[in-house]
View (cartoon, rainbow, N blue to C red):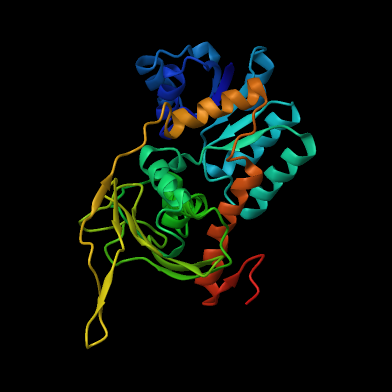
Length: 345
C-alpha cells in the first residue's frame, strides 16, 4: 500500500522511520512546507525531493498511485487535510489529537460519515505491551470489579512551536493519551469530569502545564488524574503510573512494569483496621505483541484499507476521548462538574 505523508518534521520524522520499516506500506509522496525539514529528510531519510509538495491537493494530483494519506502536521491543519483526502475517497490515518478544536473534530467525523471514507486516529498508547498486559488482567476478571483508579503523570518536557501557544498544553497534546487509555482499560466512557489546571511559577509554557482531575465512570468507578509537563524531578514514564483498586486486590502499572497484590484473608484489629494477610506482590510478565504503538496502528490501518477490517480508533470513536479534553477545559473555566451523556446525576 502506498501512502502520502503530510508532515515530515518533528513527529513526522518518527513516522518516516515507521513507514520505512514496514513491509506492508511505502511512501508515494510527501507534503511539507518547511525547507529545513525537507533538506534534513533528503539527507537523513533518503527521500526524493521531487516527491515533496507544498499542499496535499498538489501531491494527490501528482501521485497517481497513492492509496492513503498519513497526516502528521500541527492539529490546526488536520481538518483541512482530512477533508481534502476524504472528498477524493482517500482513507486517512491522522496523528492525534483529532483536530485543534471540538468544532473541527466534529467536522472531520461528519465528513467521514458523509463520504463513508475511513478516517483513523493514531491513538497509540493502547498498543504497547504494558497497556495490553493491564487490559488482559482487568478483562480476565481475576481481580473482580474495579472500584477506583489513580493515574500519575509527571514529565519535564521542552516543547516549542504551536505548543507554546496552547492555553492548556498538557491537556490538549498529552492527556488525550491517558483519557483514551482510561476508556480502553475500563471499557467505558466517563459520566462526569471535574478538575482544575494551573501553571507553576517555573513553567516555560505560556499556558497551564499542570492539571488535577476527577472522572466518574459507570459502576461507581472513580478515576483521579494528576499530571504535569513541568515536573522538577522523579519523572514517570510516558504511559504514566496507574493503580487499580479492585474487589480482589490491587493492579499497578509502575515505571512500565505491571504488578498484582491479591486480597486473601483478613484479620480485624480492635481499632477496626483490616490487614490483608497476603503481602506478596507478583510481577506480571508483559504480553508479547507482534506490532506496537505506531507500528501497530500502521498495520491495522493497512488491513482496514486493503482487507476491509474494522479498526478501533476511528475518528467516530476517538472523538469521545477528544470530547473529554474539552469537558475538562469547561470544568477549568466554570469551576463546575461537567456531566456527560449517560450521567443521571
